Image 1: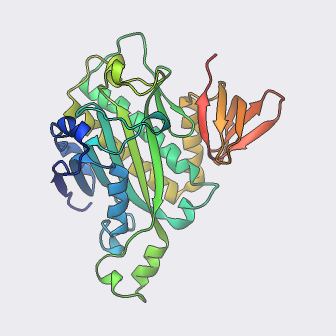
Image 2 (image 1 turned 180 degrees about the horizontal axis):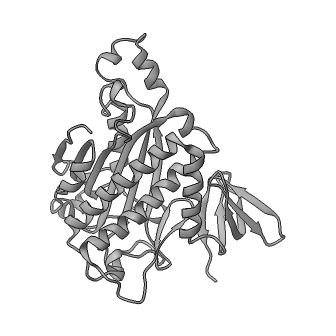
Length: 332
């Protein structure tokens, strides 16, 4: 693994005036455990978006010399971008919404995967599923580290298809996965005929952005369906160590899962499929699917399929296979 790089950035000058007081109290997260397992880490007090910064790093060739992009010692390269506050975060219906420093986990993870895998519709849905499983495993590991216990009998973490993290039936966080062209780096950028350039063309950047409500007060949650970790686990560790523990655990889990997906796609998809079925909040519930073309499907979520798509049966008994869409769970 390459030596980790830790970059701190102060609040940017164009912070909107109504957020200035909040932004200036933000601090770049201290994340020593994450820095020890990532190949590179950048932390910001305030940033527009950790995903945007991660995309820029990949497009600028930040994963290093092209010969270093291939897995080293059975591991995928991993860049981490974290912030105490995101300035361009949006709540429901695009409403501008600011948290407070220390309220949330806002971290993006960037790596490279074979283009053939990342663009294969029969496989690539499992990249996001792998991120979801890594996130709930990281939460469980971090809570175990700090010895936090629930305020009630249980507060299970589950996945709502395709990209939400739920806790005790409420939305705790979300995941956004994006594909990004990789920029050339070093000597390979100057040699169009280089075999390394050809190798780079076989790879594509992947950014996994994870947002989790850690200490958001109940009166500042963006929707009635939202929740925050401290509402279920009053014995949480301070935000700094907790955020670091979650991110470090996720680097390790996501890296291992993506490596297995590259090395043995069929076997890893089957394992992820089993985990997703075990951890699903969606299956067996009434859902509303908003499709990209404006259509709406309402019915029961029947199954997560072998390609990570979702099958929904409507009121007339017709089944619909959904690969992309905004899926909401309807009240009973």
